[in-house]
Image (cartoon, rainbow, N blue to C red; front, side, top):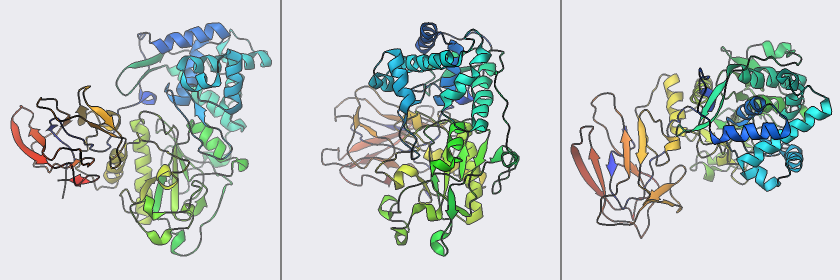
Length: 496
């Protein structure tokens, strides 16, 4: 059995990719600051926009953090009738158009520039405050404007968004860093409570989820479902992973609205602290608008071709965006625990034929959960929670997809990004063959001495080296051996 898919070191002339693994913790898991943090460029943008449009900068930061973790996202449509969200402030549809006009910036700039995006959001919130005659000097009084900004229609969803999302972020404070550890922005704790009605949670939302009754799960039934068909086609056989293209609260709020005409079985919060069940697993949720095509899933179960994928799948939505650079470890782990439970309930094999991406089965208009969903780590966590842990380590040429505690990738600027078909994950690097030492190095950590098999994945081509050297070293720098590989053949798969 192959137990490691990675490289210790590889010299120049390699065109290769390992695969996906864990993500470093993203902003939602960052502890609150205990002392003033260094000022980032984004902090200055928030402060300037706040001054220019008479909006508390701390409030702007809290809203942006709840919406995107301060990432500049490029959204896509996930649910019918809900426009794609853009930028740090997740502006979408009419709110994006109006905010751009109020800030005197173009809609294109709002979608692509952090500064324009934040200014448009500040201008929009300022206009709401003016229309509502709010006391701008009182951060607590801004709560109704925050509720309106959310775009959530239900009073319960608005109240939860205001109190538990935005104002809770204000109270706790946060330091946001990207996956490389660079400071995005910081928000010092502010002792303020929202001047807004508290959530009047329905009895159903207080109940434990019917199919996954563990701490932190909530039953929020959606009207958007129907019965699964009888026979084998209606038996649960796969799990589809989605991203909401929005925040957790806005996601379940939208999917429990009858006008949405869409749903999912579950929605997982960004910090993993809560999971909402919206549809019973025995019922057919409306989470994928595609008939099954086995050619998109390695020719698996081709007899299902032409049937709606909703018939035999469970859909799990995740607060977040397909374009974000990484996913919080706590969210991934909470989802993996849920997936393990589903696997046990329906004897679903824990592999990538049965745990699939929305964009994989609906590629013509969806990409979620996106290129940086940590598939290898996710599957390993599912197996671990089910008591069948994997010993594989996969090292990707995209460090966004690596668990930095056990795997990392290093390459010089001489290596370019390739685009030929046959790569695994998000892409690969290549360099011209030269008589120099310019390695692409794949590092992995083992807690104890072990015998492992090493596999490699590359993109084959007639212009590739026939003798690409893979050189393995141990931690003390001792060379363990060299294998020369013909990269003109055997591409697009793991090779031992």
